[in-house]
Length: 242
Image 1: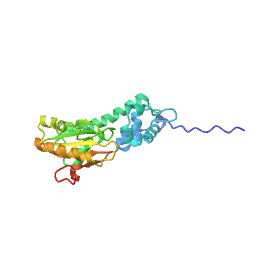
Image 2: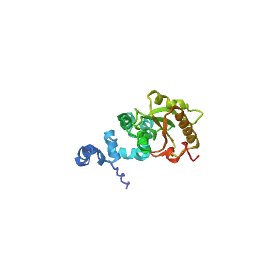
Image 3: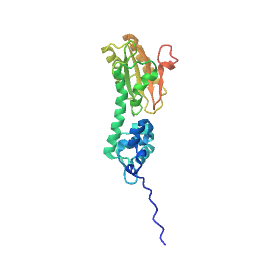
Image 4: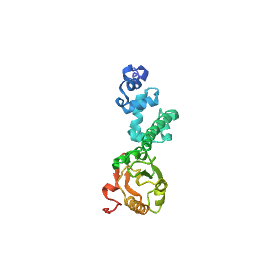
């Protein structure tokens, strides 16, 4: 007697679920914060594939990429290679990620006041944590430590005093008569521990700021959703430890 055919487990379609369990209906009723990450992604994906509804597809996507941080760092091309995603779904996901970045960036235009290193890090954390190269940004501040416009990209590549033109760090600050700046760059490895080169660059920027009468309030190193303040650690600033 032949063995019976193995049973195939099929996930119900979203529309087959009771209304109270459907992500869109739950969002409307309970708010977005009540939904899991997979449910929120399922709303962006809209539909699943054969044997996988949108929530199951989103669950697999998150597991495959390493959660939301992995999704944030994944390129459009790599998303298209994931089974069940393709160009249309990849575009929807990338659009959602970019909207999140722009929401965070736009807060700088609203004259945010920087009162701590964390305030400054929050302006760039979302964007810099996903990059696979080092990028150096400058935040311009007025006399009340209010942000003047969006953070400015100054340089990308390996952070090195022989490659970075220190004058570029202050070019826009001089033009808009900024009173102070905060410098920030990322470590693609995810580890925000400052390197000797980071400290050397900081020292050069701080000294240039003194000549221009523009205070360098801090230099932040941003890793995988973590950051280090060189000012707090006394690295590269007056009275530094090294």
